[in-house]
Image 1 (cartoon, rainbow, N blue to C red):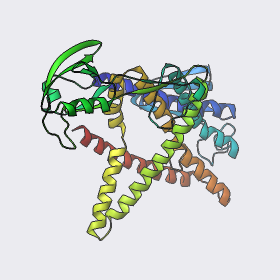
Image 2: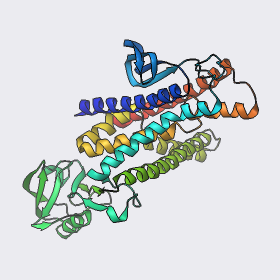
Image 3: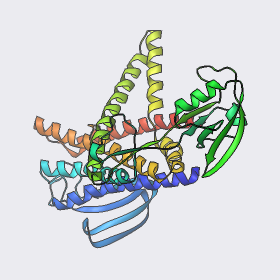
Image 4: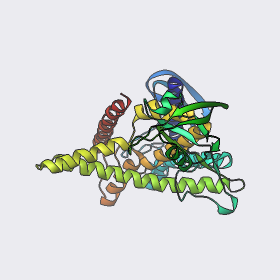
Length: 385
């Protein structure tokens, strides 16, 4: 399951990035810029073929590359200073803006489509005020599930596993976490009959509950939860659009918050005061726990979503797609937003953006991004082990 989750995640991530790059290519062609190559993955090249006529133009080289980390589109004269006909650099400011933002728009369109499909099948409810059309929305709750099971607990000894659906205690139905808590509290120190379901089959087991518990250890040793989904019919496209807008705003707020905490943590960790350094290290630790890199996404998040079913996998894909859109709107060099920001600043200052200057700015941004990826990857590995 872990391997299958990693492979599935890799395919989805490559597909989302490739569609992002396809957006750049399509809009570049429509604005007179020549597309030279469209690649899946990153070099070294495994296979390539020049297509005489394609959606990206004539004689475009389509390549499949060995590093499955996304994709790319290569435009003629990609530097802002290029001036030949068909060069990206020869396009007007507004044409370049459209080309740079096309990938972001493509990722938003993908998120809208996926959320619209989920709105019909049932979109997971993760926000209290999640967008819905009140007249066409139904909240559906799943049976109570064992989300987490404490090792060496009464639940473990009784054979319960994560994902089991908890149905009845001593013959009485339990449908909420509060029901389970009340039932176990009323029978603390006693042996109860617990009926649960696993993969559609019901089981009966006797569980000897603890007589006492602390804040971290309950009488049964189970953290329970319910999945809630919102279903729509005719309003699905509107829900898809509204959910994408709402989640984009939440993602943007979260991203800015994480970046702010990271900057604050680094600044405090360099202080001469021991208390400030401790506070800075705590801040950075919290940042590390709230973000995930390639290993965390592929090795943890996607396998969990895969095991939870198609709905969770589609939901995760939509969230990652809009996250790609948000990240690429930020003024970070080496990303689309950073390239647009750099181009705009030099336009406002009326200074030429030479090839050498642009390469230095983008290289500095790329090295910074790679350093962050390395740090997040180290944190991901520590979470795994």
